[in-house]
Length: 374
Image (cartoon, rainbow, N blue to C red):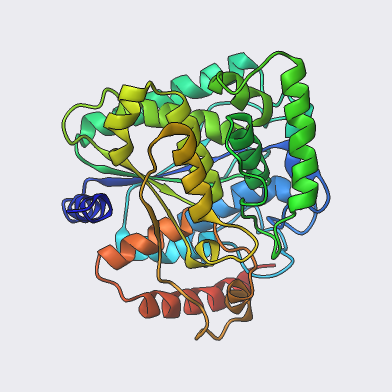
């Protein structure tokens, strides 16, 4: 059995035995305030509320209370809607963690009381003490899941406006040739603007004497709180690598590949060889087939640096037969991914739901959402 087949079979078994959980990590970075860098909110100010609003939508659905209105988008609709619809099928226990969002969500959540990151261009995005606190809390969450479900499946999702920019910065800071390969919420990823910000941050990082051989220093310099906390989650969940162990499904695209890179950079060669089979990256077809980025090549670039490559999957969900324009916008290259949408949609396929049925349910839920959203 190939590694992807084995991974799929183990994930399916964890679903069937109710040994799965969804962890949504919210975070913020001042990078999102740069005009033109993100479409996770039509204006820089509105992006401050995106993480809270998305968590509330995932928690309560289109008809539930949302004290924080979904920010207006240039096109499309929040991917949290897709995640909520998938969750109606999966019913995974949901844990929300605020690792440093601008606004806390009005749902039960783990609150760390930590600030958002500074803009990655500063080369000093987070204080080392903040990174260590994020790592420690993440390890506690990961270890707690491992103790409850020694061979379970943890689905890790994120909402970080500006997070594809910190993803590219982190990867390049770790020595991965990621320029031009990273996706984004805009219809066309802002490669020129993003590249300039990243280079500025890396120059500042290098001037402070930080090298690609120091992964924790790199994430502190140009990363975001999600990356640091999620690294801790993986450390608590997957180490030490003994027996089959639990699995981590990184539900997302470029941001999750950046997390995978940070994870591999933090391991010894022997640990990488033992652990890489426990982790997979799962995204949407819109990210996987995006002409302005290349997730498969990006994964290969990780393998070129660390010698191992996690399995990469994408869901079969498409919206070309939907009625709601906000969903048809996904087929035109808008939004594409977020809040675990691709990974959760893929899991519904493992659970036996036809992708067309999921699309129809999204169409109905989108209609409900747009009727009640102010």
